Length: 85
Image (cartoon, rainbow, N blue to C red):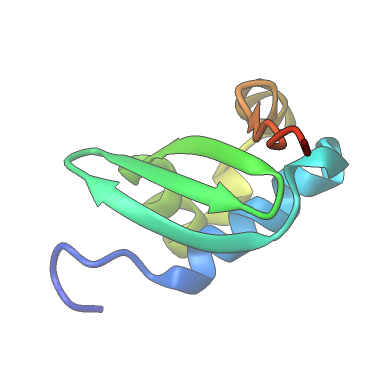
């Protein structure tokens, strides 16, 4: 894994786990890394992940507990649809 680049599949795996808790999260579209934060855009909105959490998913996913996932899933921000005129 190149230094400073997060593995995409770890982000997608984490989203899959989170979607199991909150189905409204949706599917991966893209992400942006900003320092220690990873902003993930999904089909339904955005969620902010920490770089440490993504790396934990990559190296030792069993260390991420259900409570951690539930807390993270609750921070999902749904995208507002544009009103049709």
